[in-house]
Image (tube, rainbow, N blue to C red):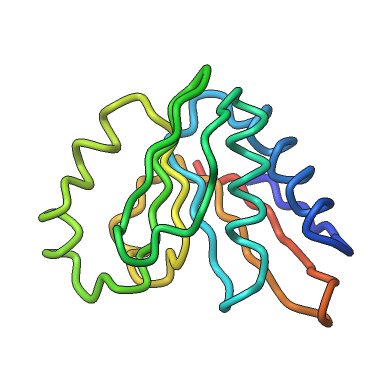
Length: 141
């Protein structure tokens, strides 16, 4: 298991870190994000999408549960904040998304931790102050 901690001081730096993670993601199917409201999860997803060639606008899928972005590798961007059980997760087609070949980027992974595949990149966000984030990236195998 590889584990690295980074400090970002702006949304742009968080996006750049997301781009770097995307370029290293290889065959990983899921990037699972853990952290509170406003901690940088959507900013990181913008960086991931950009690095994978998507021109689509990235926004948090709070009400739609999932947004899809087209690029060299398609991205399924999930917001699991409103998912309250694993049964609901299977109802939205989670297994199909995992098998699609798309990179699944998941906000609020705390709510579905038992449904994450073993080959997941775990990204934890800690808010230090208004602009600064401590971000820990862990590759789980």
